[in-house]
Amino acid sequence: LLAASDIVLSWTVNFDRARLAELPVTRPRPTITHWVDAMAMPWGTNAKPYAPVHEVALSIGCGIVQAHRALPDCLLIARMLERMVEKGADVRAMIQHATQPRKLYEGLQHFNDNQQAKDANFYFDRPTKRWLRQATASEVAALPFPCKEVTA
Image (cartoon, rainbow, N blue to C red; front, side, top):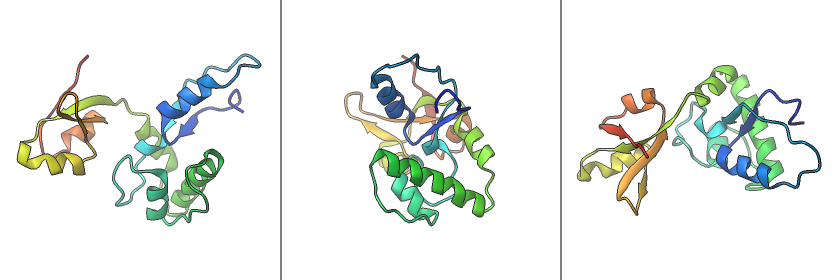
């Protein structure tokens, strides 16, 4: 199936890419050049960016039978895409949005505004005591506080 695929859509690309690499090799593994992180797709909901798949599914009206199992999660994502088509969304545009380059940014908000960073889906990195998030330049430009790109 992978060899015949144009893209691989995953809820958490880094996790799934690592799991795929761990599978026993019985024949040459195809090179996957187009991984799409479904978490980065604009689902048009009030769910936070990068929320768990079940939260986003519920917010767009998809029922959940089983959660946190590989096959049910794949089927759920497929149903979510179908639901977005039913709602008139352009799924190709959603995928294109998810493939935009993302970089690691540090939120430079004032200490009293840390909740803003949390609400914008930054996470607190305890070892470095910084609020961090993977984002596109346009996502960062829309934030109500300054950020800087994290290098090395």
